[in-house]
Image (cartoon, rainbow, N blue to C red):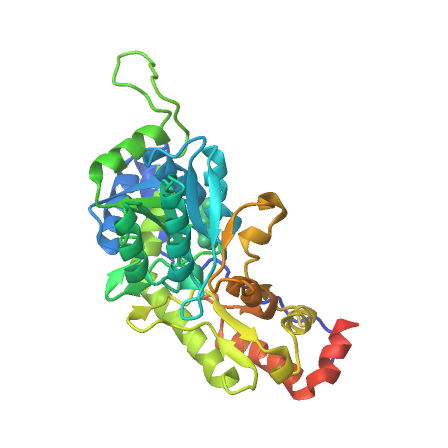
Length: 395
Ligand SMILES: *Cc1c(COP(=O)(O)O)cnc(C)c1O
């Protein structure tokens, strides 16, 4: 190999459509740089139409959207909220913002998302103890939708509202319905690495327009209807700016293309690497269509002769950004001692196994075919050389 460093391939780089400028210019021409404005209203309507919900409220981040969702469901001190363990920290931090306590739920094999079995046990225990959770936060990781039907049945049995963390699943469907619109409230993120981006931003969606009106009120410092500045409730400064909403509108127009591109990238990985012994890609549950935000796989180290850690090191050496799967939240030092329900009682948590053996591959919709070949070649080399190569990269 030559010593020359090849250009870096990123995990999921922002991918502009070219139309963003037009909307930004419009905002400038009308001098609508102030936070609220016509682009924001239009972006909300367009996202709601896409998600199939009655309304939407645009905010400054996906994390802010989750925080508002919990506020709207009256989550406070002394309450508990159930949440998927296998996710990014932002899914659960808002539980702590509210002074409530998370209870983490394991993943299951068919979706890698919330296990209905574990959720059922957790709800039964909570009901027996007389303290049902105020909400269940269900995450659709890497674009794969959770087993919503089973989760719905359980949550309605106990009367607990569902908040869908659809930050990674915008454009994914469950039996033809868009993610985000499957629970009481849903949230999206437009952070720089997500399938579409406003550089930073989020959205709360729901069929409950009264709740969304309350969300907009809370997101603008909870200002009472009065001629002077008057406040009876504690609010936040969480609204999205009109300029960034313009970027979002242009991005939303190409969302379906972005989903198609990410799915094609996944197909290529699956086609070229799927036959490697010990390699298994994240499954797609029958009746769901994942946006394949990130291509994720697990390695059976014995069968593959290579560990996920070795593969990550080899990719990094080739200047390719790959990442381990999310470290489960019940394993995070921040949440030490928090209650956790595993998928199969008495067995090792399923999401821990995923975490220890998996990784995400570069999946940006703007990645060229040649760049993806570089990733595939690098991985094939590692497999081809088996243990020797992995021993080398480990040293
Ligand atoms: C990105 C992400 C969030 C948070 O969104 P931000 O816009 O970055 O605040 C929440 N949950 C999951 C699963 C995410 O991937």
